[in-house]
Image (cartoon, rainbow, N blue to C red; front, side):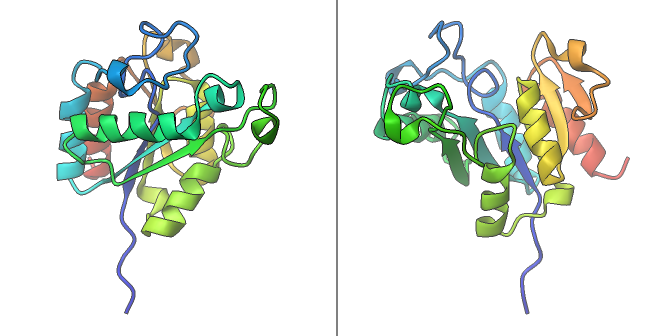
Length: 191
């Protein structure tokens, strides 16, 4: 007998869970010593994990393709992030490719690069996740587009989120991950 599929919350990384653009203006976070959780992010991840959601981080990391840092740096940032989150992230998926990169082996489009759903689909297959009862949360419209393409419900967070309210890929908008967690718990309980 196969075990039932589990719901997940897929989270973008930069400016969703950790501060990025205010620390690294070009947006390429490849420095584990600079990783800082955004206010309330740790509590939100703990609440979601405690509610039974698998926590999966899915992040475009075009800085690899642009030659700013290597894949080892991405993994080091993820290790630091998961340490700060008490090991609650079950899996990380990242896409080092970018069509306008400067490192030849990474300079191309790729099915894992959001807004494509490849990272979510791979994690769902590998971890036995129920995409129809899962959520994608991120600070960019492309995060929601990836979530929608994978069959998840979506939340766009951040100060610009309201500008995309009503976009077909966006189910809900929230100012931050803490409020997004509240929406997920409320909407997943059948209320």
